[in-house]
Image (tube, rainbow, N blue to C red):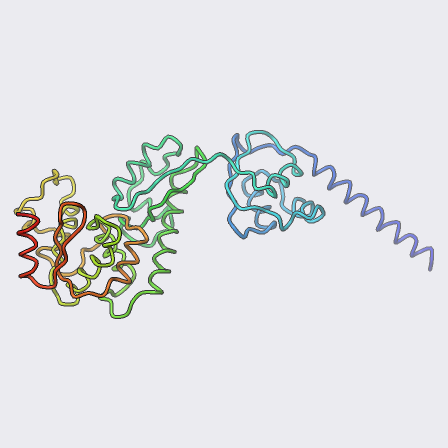
Length: 330
C-alpha cells in the first residue's frame, strides 16, 4: 500500500515538474508578431480567458490555455488593464503579461467630431486624417452603417461628437463604430430620463429634434429654451419654420445665402411648408442638445429671433415676435 502511494506521489511530482518546466519554457519563448506593428485593444471588464482567446484569434498565441495558466500561476489573471496596445517587436508571454498588467498603451492620436457637423463633413475629416487607415473612403453610406452594426438606413446624426483617441494606423471604421455605439448609449440613457408629454414616438425623433436645436443654438445656455419653442410648436400643430433644416435639404445648392424662394422650395426638410419633424437628423447633436430635446425648459415661447450677438429674443405670441424682428433684424 505504501509503495503504491509512494509511486503515485512520484507521478504527481513528475507531472508538476513537467508542467512547471513547460510553463517556464512557454513564458520565455518569443512570440512572433502577426504583423509589425501589431495593435490590439482590450475592453474594460475583459477576463484573462477572453484576452487569451482574442490574442489567439489574432494569431499572436497558438492556443489560449497555456497563457491563461501562466497568468494564474503568476497571480496576474485579474490584473489586466483595458486600453489600446501596440507591439513593434517580438515579445515573450511573460513580457506580454507584464505589459498587460501595467496597462502600457500605444501612443494615441486625437480625432475630433464636432457638434453640428454633418455626416458629409465628418467623412471629409476622416478621409483627410493622417493617423487613420481610410477603410471607409470608398464605401457607401449604407455599407458604412452595415460595417458599424447600425440598423438605421441613414447615417446623419448617428455618431456621437467627441474627441476620440486612436492608435495611428487604426481603421476609421473602428472609430466610427465607437462613435455610433457612444451615440446609442447616450441617446438611450437620455431617453430613459425624458420629461413627460413629449411629442415624439421614439428616441430617433428626439435625435432629430436635438440636431435642430444644435444647429439653432448660438449660446449653450439657450438650448433648453430653444427646445421648448420647437416642442411647443409641435404640440400646437404649428410648422417648425427653422432655417437649418431648409439649408440641409438644399444640399450643395446652398451658397451661403438663404433666399425667400428657398423657403418656398419643397424638399423633405423644408419645415416652412412641411409639418412635423424632418425625416432624419440634420447634423451631429451633442449631449447638451439631446438633453434639451428630452428635457426642455418649461415655457410658453413659440418664436425666437437672433439678436446678432449669438443670443435670441424669445416670444410667446406673433405680435411680440414681430416687434423683436423689427428691433433686431430690420
